[in-house]
Image (cartoon, rainbow, N blue to C red; front, top):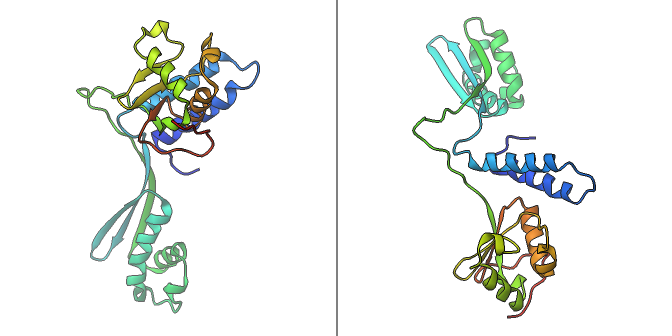
Amino acid sequence: MTELSHVELSTIMARVRTALVGIDNVDAGLLADLQQAEQWLDSRPLPLPVDVHVGFIDHKCGGNHYAAFSRKDLIAEIAQFCREWWSDIRDKRDPATLDDEQVAEIYFERHEDEYLWTERISVAVSVPESVSPLRIGRHLVISTSHIRPSTADLLDQWAPLLPEARPLGVAEAGYGWFVLTDPLDGKAPEMAPPELRAAIDFARAQGCRWLLLDRDADCVDGLETFDW
């Protein structure tokens, strides 16, 4: 697997958690830990530590430093130097016909006065004490056409209520509503219309904590649409 961003890691965790919700006898603590890990990743203001491939060529005119995010890219830069000075090693092979690893290996094995050093190092990011972590979340935006007008009326009724009086988390958003995608419990599954539950499940499957139903947004495949 290639390097992943915070958002990609959090999305994978959300997809795993969503898949586990539908399985009997799943440890509730595991689901809670996964959700906490998603929130932790979403709140990190800076990237995770990253591996960097570095290299140094000691040659007759001094030295060259190289750095790349993969060994392949690093060796490609080093091979460019080797091809430029290929005549120094008096090798009859055409470096253009060799891959980058071969070019570098042959060049420094045959050259008596030049040397190559490479290493992979992990670069950690330090967070300044004066910087408070920002909590950054994700939401999915879809058209209000994915719910019935009668469901829109329900959302209008629920949004002004106190949080404990709402069957689900919802807030008015100008020309639509923000809806929390956490699994519904209590009487919420009975009170929420089926197309709204489907939209919530769809957003949660994409790793989104919130669903934004917006009048001007596009419709998406996989969800029913309704005429207003």
